[in-house]
Image (tube, rainbow, N blue to C red; front, top):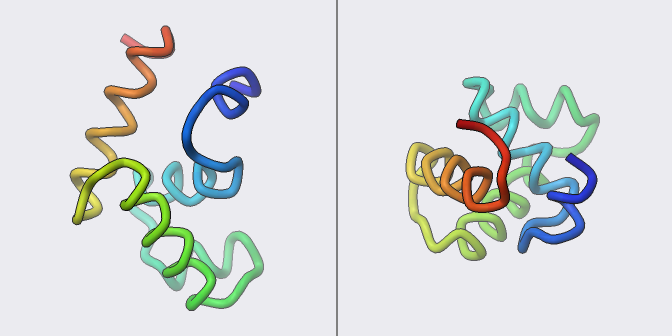
Length: 75
């Protein structure tokens, strides 16, 4: 996974947030898990949505799956 993080358009923190979104966490749960403010999570989500070219959580998860496949991760 470190290679994926180095070569992807997302920061390491954005990948962490996206992984927690994928796991079904709410913004408040993500904030608690990462020990940051909920507003910080909203900023990370806004940035990763922009980088992925999506507008909704489910679209972000689907786009992340496509990115992983293109980079040789996952099925």
